[in-house]
Amino acid sequence: MVKEELFGQLRGRCPVGQLSLDEDVYEYGDELRVELLKIKEYNAYYMKSVLKSIIDKEYIDLEWIYEEYMKVLNVGVPSGGDYEDIIEYRLSDAVTMKMWERPKLISSLSTTGFRTWEAALYLCVYFDGMKLSANGNTYLELGAGTGLVSMYLYKLLEGRCKVYITDGDSNLLDGSLLKNLQLNEIDERQVVRQRLIWNEDKNIPLDVDTLIGADITYDSAYFVELSQCIYDFLTVGGSRCKEMIISCTVRSEDTIASFERSIVDVGLKIELISDNDLKIVERVERMLYKKLIAPIRIYRIVA
Ligand SMILES: C[S@@+](CC[C@H](N)C(=O)[O-])C[C@H]1O[C@@H](n2cnc3c(N)ncnc32)[C@H](O)[C@@H]1O
Image (cartoon, rainbow, N blue to C red):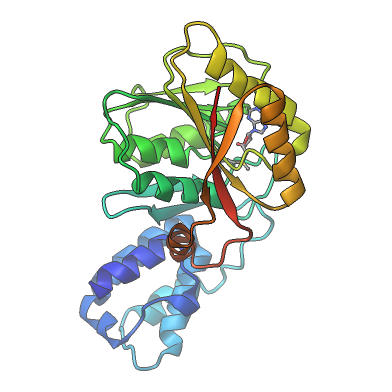
């Protein structure tokens, strides 16, 4: 149990000061070495920090520790924001997702989709608490970024759904999204990856039941296009789409109010269905090993 907890923390890149390291580590030292060598492939600096932390705890005696530490002694802190890593998120009892991302990268190459954002984790935990129908429902995610929410839904429903993963950035679709599908052993033929720039790409699939989105409401400059795109899904002739479920990080009340207004302006209805629910917040914070940067809300939008 303690071993599983520690390994989960390591895979989630828990800050070393918060790791459950105690003298029992001695009992599964060899497995820990294997685990750390796997981590070294992606993030040697993190491995080095963990080793250092064990060495500092003089009561933990592992004979291989100095040998491995010497091998990474020269590894420095990853510089710049664009270092890559694979981070595991324990989203529910049944589902853990592995995501290839650039965790410190806010924005690059005109996208903010290289890392997983807090609102995505919040939405996944929210879905975990709902009785989602697995009767062949079809979901489409707008601005999917790393694709966490779509891939999580797919896993949660054990593949008994269809998922469209869309983003405006084609590089993400053919790069990190593809990698993440492979990492999570999702057959890429089982989900559709599609470029969808809001209100520009009009190739809207008609078989979508529920539209989803996480942290796509950070910039009011795109609200007209985003609202029009949601409107098209909910109203275009032949579309089965009945609702959009969207999670929003409230970095600014004004921005969120402006999003609400732009939805009403196109003639849609918007309803708040989760307002920084503390149970969900706690779970997300435990997953991220830190406090959330801002409150998170989920809205339901209908025609
Ligand atoms: C902050 S990221 C959120 C990514 C992901 N949903 C998450 O929560 O981790 C916003 C995403 O929206 C995409 N995006 C921004 N503007 C867009 C537009 N006009 N059309 C389509 N996608 C867009 C970006 O490429 C990026 O992947």
